[in-house]
Length: 133
Image 1 (tube, rainbow, N blue to C red):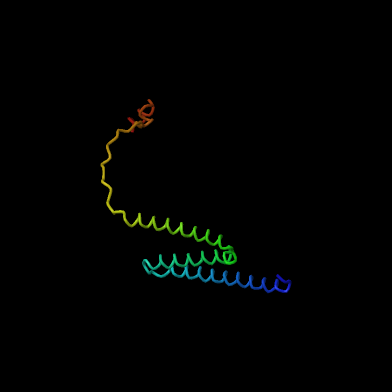
Image 2: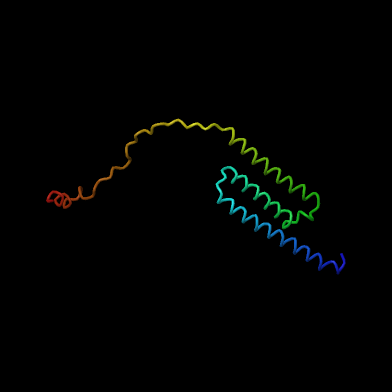
């Protein structure tokens, strides 16, 4: 790398980081705005898509996957693949469960372990005071 290229590389990197930051801010605003619209399942889909795009921007620009060697990109893609596999298996498990109420079992009556006695009933003055009134 020549010394003359260093300032231009710095400017390009600064510009790339600024654009990524602005994109993340716009996606944050889109995420906040989408929460105010009642789209049903569309809110979930919009939120997940926005989150995936934001994670991609962070990984590509800020984590340096853009300039990373091929093996590091393969490792990152493997991590994303494992995450998607686990999310898919969780979705299959959730989707295949039946919604059945659990059988109700009436609780048995259990006698109290301690019997609370009013202290005034045991004290001689307490009995007199209770009888006088």
